[in-house]
Each structure stands twice: as C-alpha cells, then as structure tokens.
Length: 331
Image (cartoon, rainbow, N blue to C red):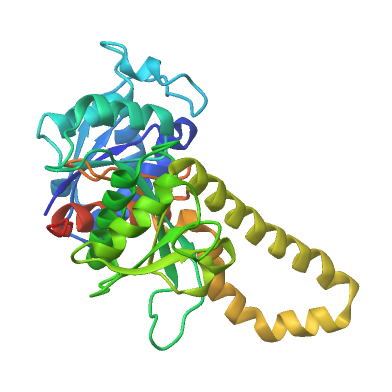
C-alpha cells in the first residue's frame, strides 16, 4: 500500500481538517500516512480522534503556514521548512510515494517541477479535474475528466496527444472504463476547426494507437457524456472548469431564492429533495477528493483550500489508488 504524505497546513493552516480526514482513513483502510506539520499541533489534534497509530507518522514542519496567496518562491527557499515543501521532499527522497495538499497551488506546481521526475516519455505534466455530466445506461460514471486545467497556458499538438494518453490511463484506473472516449475541446466539430495546433492534434489523435478518439467537442457538449476525457490547453481548461462550477452555484442559489416566494417551487423542491441531495456532491467538486497532477513519477493530489475533512480523506484514498494502479498505455 502506498505511503501518502499529507500537508496538514493547507486549509489556511487549520491542521485539524487534514488530521481529521487522515485519522478517519486510518480506521477505514490500511493506507500508511505521514502527516507533515508542526508536531505539537498535529499530535494534539490526533489525540482528540480515533485513529490507528501504527498507520500514521508525523514529520515536523514550520509553524507558519504557506498561505494560498503567498508567492510560490517562498516554498522553494532553502530551509523554508513549510509543510508543502517538506511533503514534496519526502516524495522526492522516496520516503513517501505521493502527497495530498489543500495549500498553495502555484507552489505545489513549482515544487513538483523542481523535485519530481517526469514519467518516461512524458514531456509535460497536466492537472486533471472532474466535472458533472449526463449519464445513461451506457455511461455509468457521472463525472467526466478534463485536462489540462492549469499546468499550461499554451502547448503544442504533441502535448495535447500526451494529455489524451494521461487522461485515458487515469479513467481506466479510477473509473474502470475499459475504452475511454477521448474528445478534443474546440470551437467546432469539423476536423479543420481551430488553429494549426488543434488541427494537428486532431489528426494525431485520430491516428493514435490505444485511443478511442471521438473527435472535436464544442463547449455545449461537455456535459453531454459524449466523451469520458476532454483534452485542452491549461488556460482554456481552467476557465471552463471554473465557469462550470460558477454556473452550478448560480443555479443552486436561484432555486434557493425562488423557493420562499412560490408554493409551487416549495412543493417541487420537497419532491425533488432526495434527488437534489444526491446531485449536490457532483456540483461541489471539492467533495470528490481533489485534482491529480498527471505525468510525474508520483501523482500528487491537489484539493480546494475550502475542502472539509471528508474531502481530504477522499483525496488520501484517491492518491493511494492512483499511485498503486496508474499506468500509461504504450503508444
């Protein structure tokens, strides 16, 4: 079972959230966890919880958290001692297999690039994320995967093809989809849509071995379930992901505002209550467990800084599963 280093000073320095999630995982699974943070605070938080002591170690780190808005250079300074840097060092030194954090995303990316190796044949790593989509009898998983969503701004056709292979491998591993369908996010479905990079990427994916390429996807098709993996440049993916999340929150807010004003809304929401409850985790992507960074020899998991303890626990379980099972199909 992989050893997972957990940055306890994410979540704005509140160690209790990460410690609570890790303690629950130690009771539920046999995952080995290294909690990285100020020893006294981490130990004090642990003592208030039920946990398996043989599955949890503590590694000391600086008392002062690395804020989510702090410049990433602070984490790179020699001897900074911040928990995110210490956790990354544990992975780079072979003392942990991968890490989970809800801390500073730019710092995590910089530390990964500085200290972790890319997998053989991988040119650039990518950040992947899940999003809700329509499901039917053929599509069992209500979450699709999109990458890149933040590691790149611009990239070339070869990078996009590699992102397709990374996404394909991840969905096979996590969602257990035997033949993931790959789509390229573009402005139109025709093969000649977009610039030279997108046209070349389309042709390369169409010819690629071990990829079930379904062609270009337009923005309105993202939630249709037509593709299991959506490939795009990081700038575009980041904008799309945040827009989807924002629209979901607006829909929930509008419904909540309308309910008190109209008895029909109140009756309808009462009848749909259980269904809405089941759908809520899909629009709150933080509950899924986090976004994996794919392409390095380790697969770090980044969580939203507002993640609750159960989301950090899910991220630890996800990190262990992906680190154990993730393999990129040969090209």
